[in-house]
Image 1 (cartoon, rainbow, N blue to C red):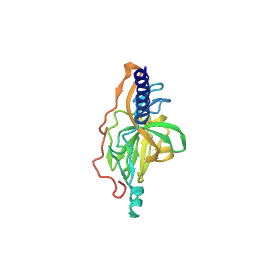
Image 2 (spheres, rainbow, N blue to C red):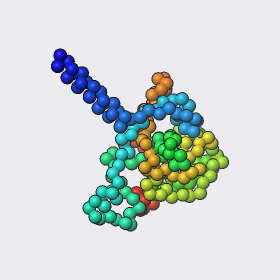
Image 3 (spheres, rainbow, N blue to C red):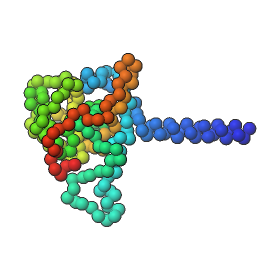
Length: 208
């Protein structure tokens, strides 16, 4: 009898640990709206990797050692890697943190972003955006992405509320990276782990 009770308790504890682990690492989201079409459509479901962008604030760590580089615009240690150009991410909307948006990272800290005739240029290099529905009339002057921030846009440029409208997304607002589009079943897609695109020119120094 005791053995059976012990086994039940162990099973419950293991299940709870597994549940907590899953909640910590991944989260499910349903797509609302058409701002990421054709990559994502209304009603589709995503699994988002919440661990990939976990980071340690170097400033906070250095403070403990009574040493801080005041000239640094901000830096972090990423066990995996920071958000990269081309990755589809979920984040808390800067204007309303209670809402979650899904967009594509276009510019990382230090990048110079410009839009001409609907074409995006990163550090002077025009991107080949086969994944996007472009707007030929879209224009934006050169803009340097601040430290610890990311420039994001929806793939459906005419119907997306993004960094062109309200500015960059702070690193702390980013929840995670889109991992799998799993519903409906016939539209299952695993998002690539490598960069979708890169810029040949280096980012502006001092913003990494």
